[in-house]
Image (cartoon, rainbow, N blue to C red; front, side):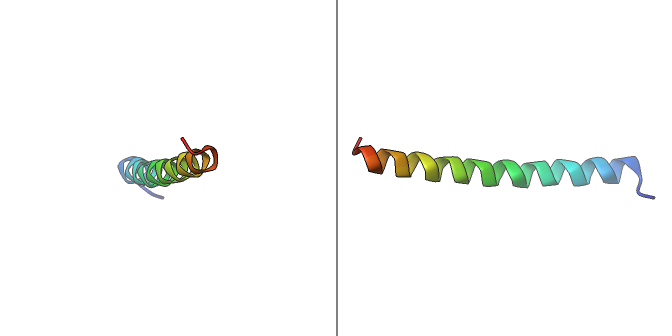
Length: 39
């Protein structure tokens, strides 16, 4: 059984990694959309 603090830390770091991936994905999407419409 994990301690609550360890569990919270794990969730926190996983969320941080997920947010970073989402931001990278969104910026890639925006780049492609702008390229498509030549803005």
